[in-house]
Length: 45
Image 1 (tube, rainbow, N blue to C red):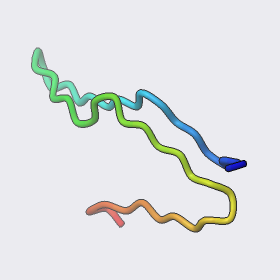
Image 2 (cartoon, helix red, strand yellow):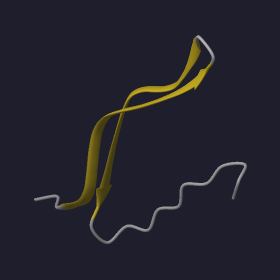
Image 3 (cartoon, rainbow, N blue to C red):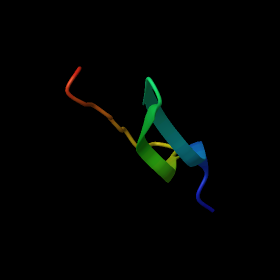
Image 4 (cartoon, one colour):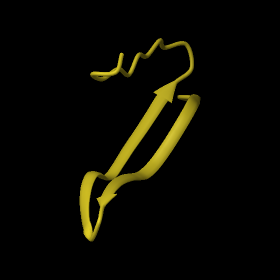
């Protein structure tokens, strides 16, 4: 049986500037099993 430490489903992220919306993430799913090391990084470090 796979036990998950983190499960996230349907992740979305939008940025709005004035009347415009930029969709960055649409329906992202993430699962991290116990005992696994994960790093998520971007331009900001």
